[in-house]
Length: 432
Image (tube, rainbow, N blue to C red; front, side):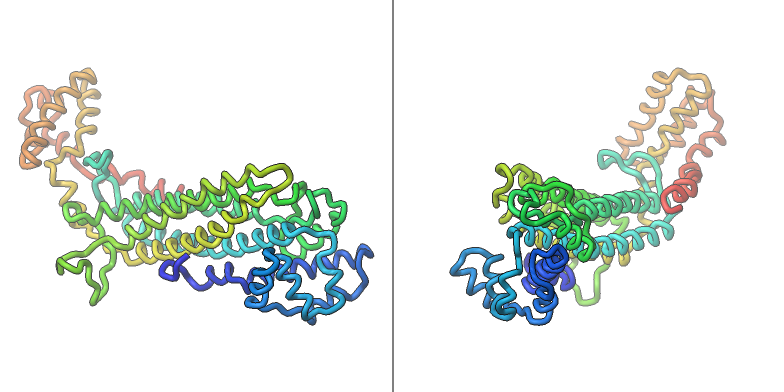
């Protein structure tokens, strides 16, 4: 991932130094288990821990010759460990090291992403409570529907990110596995006790059955979960983009002093953060398909998955980390315009109360189809006037309506408090 969309803590997880440190830990913990089983002499693991050194440039130099990254790493380690290095990696395959390391890196990345989601959740909760009773118009198909509150909008997104957090916890558990099973996964040259020891030391669970690789459905689950999180980010970002449109102007991204929105038009305030989040969400979702295609490998293993994971592991987690933090900051500083929300709600002459009129007429004894026709006739007159006519006045002037509903009853129908009556109960269900 390019530096523009990277944050240091997540980037460090995917740097060679972290990867090779994890590889070294795996080899040393495996050596400890082998000593306990009498496969290699006592003291090898301790000696390796004390003397082993690696150099990224040297590993790259060796790999250019041998064309194998794990062999290059082991060769470089041997240069500092000396004769005892012949006992390192006994009975193991490259995938034992590479796959277990990938699991560790994904769990490390998950922990950062969970912290990121917590920040998003905290921001959404704070702003939702702040605007719990802030009336705004709800839209379906982009058209005014009925009143809602801005707090309810944000509460819905909070609930979505809470589900995302739960999904990521489950996906983290799914990939937090250790595999030290030797060639084709039989444990013939690497008894299960080795895997169990390494797993315990590294905070992983032991893979119950593998081929020569960790089953890739685990990673497919993980990257699809990242894709769902990305979709929830885009959903919120798209809402903000719509609300910031000039014709709507109900909310907008914070515009800092000295910031410029356009190279050509000085008046512009563009929703660049939410648009950026939308783009990054597309990128993260795009990694879900190759992760699923990695599940099908030839027999006990091939390496068609390897190049994919070397790209999607860093890129997906780095991009999502960046986007989640950008989203959290966006919500924390989001500028909200309740007066504009009220103006937009009132802009179409009260049409948003049409369902309540319909239901009142049916309760007053008019058949639903007849009631619908009566309400729609008056509503379309307001619609065609671009909201200049009053829906309530037309209803009061309608002979059929006025026979069934008093003017006082009609006025009561146009009270927005009706739409906030259940908000506290909803909030209790969402936030506890």
